[in-house]
Length: 467
Image (cartoon, rainbow, N blue to C red; front, top):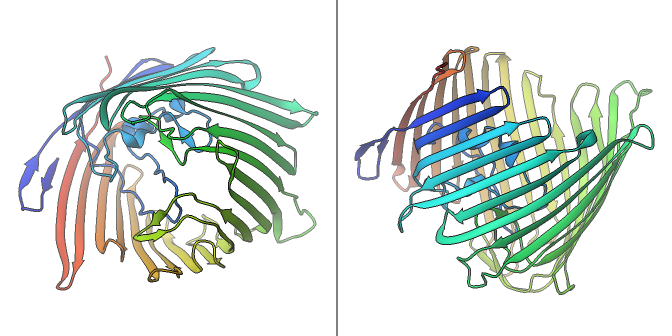
């Protein structure tokens, strides 16, 4: 990899990735001086809530057999791979060594991963292990453990167990599934470093047209898995949801209609009400053409006990209540022109406002796509200046043939005033062997125009060796 820093200095680096299939059901992965510069850039996200936000994993090493390490908890996870090799602000943290082995056996599945990362305080080692026993009819029981903290030198850990029951012949042609989980964590990087335990349960009934969901979970205060993710802490959550999806065989233009209701109640662990959200989708149509459109309304009541910040606006503790309405339309993904449109109107929850979102992709031929996206969010705070956030993006994809493609992503927003450009060439020069060439550029919008702030290129070559 080569990189141009802000001082116009070039740096070079290199690494090695290996993937070895031990047998038909077991695979080992090894990465030395891991470089993720070839990874597709994140789509810019902005958090309009007072809770933590998560991002999807896009790095191949962590995506390979990622389902093996999945833990079926709600709103939290003991293992969140985005913490490894990335700082809290999204900056790359060097990974010196990473190894993983996964196996899918008839009665057992397991995965083990160990990563050695760099830090200003010295090298740190993190480990995650997962084992799951397969029971009858798709049911499972499992254990997941982690050790180490990628953002602290303390020896912290998490241990979780889960059970998933599936009955695919409930009441004849219906299904009933239940999952139970418990997770303990000890984060010694925190002042409150005692072992903390969370737990939850969920049951889902599915019929031909009706789905019902009931769930409960509890997470104690200051619950923070060192290698995981938690959206919020100190809560008891109750969820009840129902969905009715009738087919309309007698209506020529309509395939199904969707009618949803979702209730979420949060109390703190002292049993004091924190927030309630009622979300109703009175109507959503999925047309015979594959297009869908609908309307959603939600009522939110929130009672934060501490001041919180959204963007650069600080809101006081108190009670916030209001409705929001959302209208949406998505065209069929097989069309030459694919559009996704959404309009949200907030009557007053946190701040009156509105949000427009639109994307348009044009595919004149199968081998070529060009797209544009735009979103605008306006929040009229009661005791602060108005926030207006605009995000513009552009994408393109050229498939010269099934083995050679070029992808481009451009993103600009008026909050950071920066333009990011990510270009990726991918060539599979023989089955299973790939060549990547990536260019990343960052520009800052200054009074004199766009100024180059960062430039990087990466070359990655992968092959298959049989022995």
